[in-house]
Length: 289
Image (cartoon, rainbow, N blue to C red; front, top):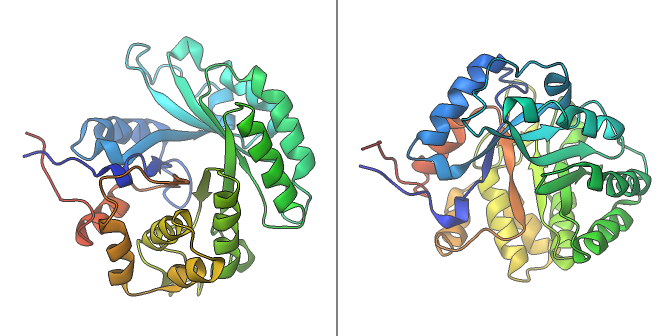
């Protein structure tokens, strides 16, 4: 039996296996990603995310068959100016970077200068279909979103990215902060990605760290509500829900429709979110024929 992932969840989870907390070795991550790409749930899975530092060090060499058509997302951990250099290492291995994601400012910095620098670099990123500017939730954020939206309206394939967790409490935005960001992107017709902290479908407290994590089912329901015109308060309320039923009620109505606004998120495990989505009934478990 085979089962199709619903359109609402298409490409929701990028494969971030080499990043913490999973921190898989690159050969193991490549082997697992190939399995994901041929599994019945393949439509759920986005590209394999790799740091620019790994790519620029030539670590893919000898691990990829040039004919296999590996698609990755490049994470700019070496900074904005080094993105073209890292991309130059991909062609000999037959690897394509579908997307580039890079932080344009540190926490507390105005992101607008970094956005401007990234926009100047985009013409030097050949073959990249989408560029995501990771923005800190700080002063200058709305101006940076305006700049991204203006560039996108001019045909530049750029969008926003936000951090929703990490190793410190301040890296977890409050429901009100995240709702404001979602609605700000909605108001600008600007897609966004999220990264870090989205380890389970429903909002929960991690007993080891004491941090409360956002749930990706919460984010999905909140984004659907925002796309339908909900106010920030309603969107924030959905982000606080710990009962999956109201989240599922919104999602199941839209399973056959493309997901609005929210491009998706990276996870160091593909099987964990898949299992959660099966448990919630948003994906039906299946087996390869």
